[in-house]
Image 1 (cartoon, rainbow, N blue to C red):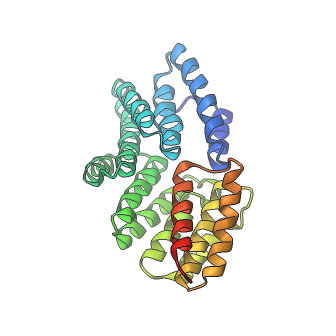
Image 2: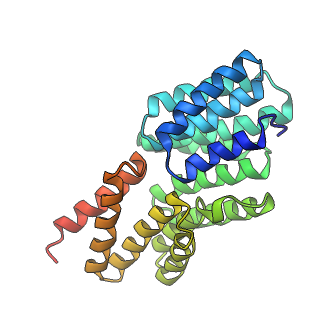
Length: 259
C-alpha cells in the first residue's frame, strides 16, 4: 500500500496503541481524519478510519462506533485503485469480524474473516488478518487452529520488520499454547513479551498470560498476585475495556474458587 501519511504520524499512532493511550489516540486521530479529508487524501482517511479509529473503538468496546468508522473507511476504499483497495478491504473486513466476535456473533465473524483471508494483501495487513482469524478460532475453542493463525501472523510481521517486539503476536501465541496444553511454551512467550516493560500493552498481556499459566499449574497464590497487580494498574486508567474484561473475569473466577 502506498500510504502518504508521514512516518512520524504513523509512529505516533502506533506509539499510543502500544502504550494503551486509547482515548488520546481517538482524539488525535479524529483530528487527523478531518485534515486528510479536507486534503482529499482518500487512502489516508480510509486507513485512519478503519485501523486507527475502528480498531481503537473495538479495544474500548465501543462497537457501534467501531463499525461505523470501519464501514465508512471501506466505502472510501472502494473508490481507490486495486492494490490500495485490496489492503484496506482485507483489513476492514478483519476488524468488522472482530466487532462481530465481541458481539457474540460468531457465525457472522467467521463469514467476514473468510472473506478477508481470500484477499491478496500486504504482509502488514495479512499479519492483522491472521491475528483476527486466530482470535475468532481461539474464542470458538479451536486452539490448534488459532495457534496456526497466530504463528502465521508472526511470520508476516517478520517480513516487514515486526512491531513493538511482538507485543501483538506473542501474547496471542501464548494463549493458544495454553489452549493446547503447552504450558512451558506459553510461559516462554509471555515472559519474552513481558521483558520489554516499555511496551505497556505487551507487559499487561504478559502478566495476564502468566496468571493464566499459574492457575493452570495450580499456583492460585501466584495467579492472584498477578491479577491484583493488573487490577491496580487498570484502576489508574491504564488499559482497555477488552483487557479489563479478561482480567476481571479471571479475578471473579479466582474469587469464586474456595481454594
